[in-house]
Image (cartoon, rainbow, N blue to C red):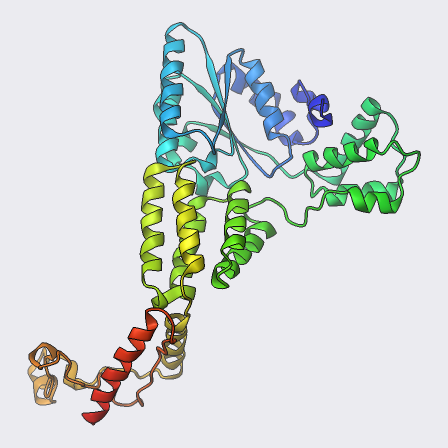
Length: 414
């Protein structure tokens, strides 16, 4: 048996940390007596799953654990139908869902009627801020309990419990501090690292052994923390560099970390314009279509759709010319407060404007033989600038020829 399973508390008063919840016996007793659905929100490794299992045991109900990644919409409907049958036999049914934010909106909506009717009691965990990741209707039907990050003192108390169970571990106070720091306040990582040290069967753990054995955890799996930015950055840079393997790896890791798939997809929409742009206009269409399809299908099959979009973006020709053109235009606007279209292209809406020559000389482009009159619509007080500079790659090769053609005719009209 793994150490974390052996040490898992079976009563609320055995849980390390979360005293702000556990010391409130009125709250806990009320949740149990009213058989309330609960949402447990907080960082990983702080006791949410342990609390959920103890709470489910207190409710004395049939217990079903669902995977938010591998449970399909059809399976959810089937589970809820069976729960409704059980309720007719006066049997209570607890549904436990870890990382419930991975269910899409439509899947979350399926929980509403069966919670409302009392056919199921939902116990759900999430590392994401529920205000952003869960439907308001679902939130209103659950009691939200926020779990806090474990403190150093909590992990030291856990260390004492471990040594009481497994025997003395010969490490120094400084080495224990290193193990605590490496755990990122996650009890699972802390227990796993200590389990490896016990496996050494060493009379004294050396610093080298400690360095070699500690689990490397440079980022916290917290949407608001470093991991969110680190992996998103690595993902975008991999796509920009046409490294499809790395992009797929980081995409999969972000999903595994609990990132909202649609948040990743929205970043891909930006990448499709910022880094691919008009070198392949289909990139934006591919991602947008993938998002629409994902919203209809949901997890887990929807990941296949998003993987297709990731590969398309990674292998598309790249150009940031459109993105750069926007930055140049912004700079010009910032430096010139007086920017106004020439009178030629403005319709006279008053008699005074007509006398001032508004609209005079304007040529309707469709009336010309080639559908282009070569007029200059740039502000009269500014020299014309060419913001968009297409690359000689992908579809932008064609656009470059078009730009050259229009510029040539426009210059002839001067």
